[in-house]
Structure formats: structure tokens, C-alpha cells
Length: 221
Image 1: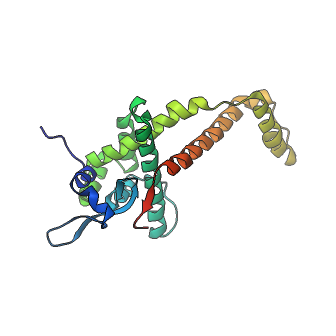
Image 2: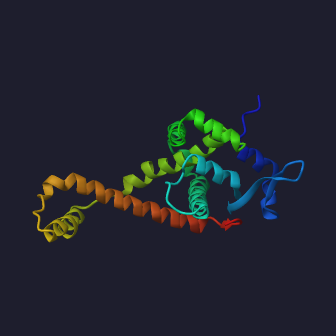
Image 3: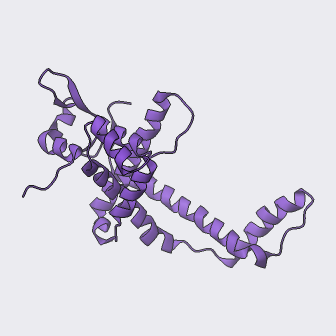
């Protein structure tokens, strides 16, 4: 039995080489454009249909702005995701992670308004749930790396906790004429805040380092 192949993988198998010579990946019999390479991470292209899929499942939070600004945000987010995913793949870490693709698929369906609504939107753009599954795997892999590898590295020392309490929380409350709560009452909450702050720093550093290891090309801004 031939396994199901998503729109993206089918196009890549047939004509990935064309991203180096032309933006067209596939054309209809009448010469109309079916899909287009908009960027590449190494030798792996990102298609216009990838951006459409990202928009349908709300990969990025909705913000006010022009359609061009929205497209730019989606493109940046999709390129960043591909950089992270390909970095995990190249390092071999990808194959040592516990990846929960199904949970991400469910989350993407919820963001899109439900399974039926998503399937209808996909059909109208020539996409399938297999394409959603491929995107979900990338997201799940990145989430797994953050949760299983980066988060355990984060440590908050007692002196950092005291410094954050004295220089941030207590100082801000005192400046407004209030009385700061004892450190013991806010210790757990403050610890969680510092952990998330440090984790975000680790993620940003990983993205920066991964970006240096991958060649990123933007073909269609």
C-alpha cells in the first residue's frame, strides 16, 4: 500500500530541485501557478501553501495590521520553525525526543475552529490533513526539545530570587506607596517567572545559533 503523501511532500518529491532555478514548483496544464517556493532553509523549500496552512491554523497570534504585515509575520514564524526543526534533525536530537504529534494536531484543529471547519478550509486551498500532520510534527518536535532538553537546564539560584524580589517586586510596590508581601509568600510565583524568563532566553539563543548553522534564503518576501 502506498502511504498517504501530503501536498507539501508530493511537491518536494517531484520537483524540489526547481527551487534553485525558478520559483515555480508545479503548474497546471494551462500554465497557471499551483505553488511557489517563497523561502528555503538549506535545501528544504518553504512553499506558499505552507504559509496558507500556517494562516489557517493560526500559527502566529492575530495582530492588527495590513495583509502584507500579516504575511511577513507568518513567513518569519514558518522560517523560524523550519530552522529549529532542521537543526534538531541535523544534530540527531530529533530522533531521541518523545514527540506528541497528536496533541498538537488537536490544538491546531481547535485554533482553526474544529476538525470539520479545518478540513473544509484545507480543501478550498488544495491541502489535506496530512499537511496539518506534517506541520504538527515540526511544532511537536520543537516543543519536545524545549520541554525535555532546554527547560531542565534552567536553574534559579537563591541570590537571583532575592535580587528579583528586592530590585523588581518590592521596589515597584514600595514606589507606589504599598507594602511588599514577604518573600516567602511570593517565592513560588517569582520562581516561576524567573524560570520562564530564563527559558525564553535559552530558546532565543538556540534559535540564533540554529540560524547560524542553517542557510536561510528568502525568495518571495
